Length: 152
Image (cartoon, rainbow, N blue to C red):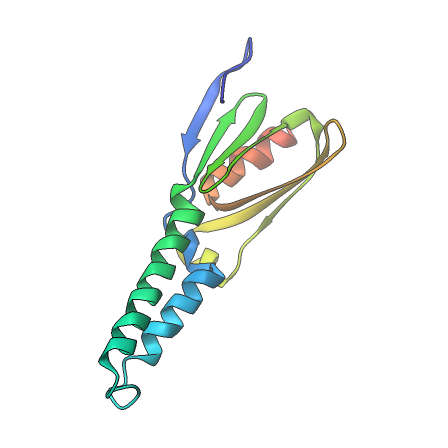
């Protein structure tokens, strides 16, 4: 899906930060299931249920990693930022830097510890565009901010 336009150069192709799945609700539920099963007094009699809950917890953690990290690819060019998503569905979003009106870089607790942020881009490109890129490495978020405000 991604092709360079004439006179456009690729700056960087990257994935979200590998720790960005830590703030996913699915990950937190998976960890909660695993933590509930650590005390031996909780469901000792029912080993099958305990094994099933551990498997569900590990599955939720794995799916949250796939959804937040492995499924996304970010492309930064001299003219635009492109986000490709492919996990159970495909989504392609591109926003030209000259169409961006506002950029917000937000970090939660896990983002500060891991060195990543969520980048929100607001602009007008064939209608209003609100783009959210989760788990963007801080260096990559500076590319977006600097390119978006280069002409201003």
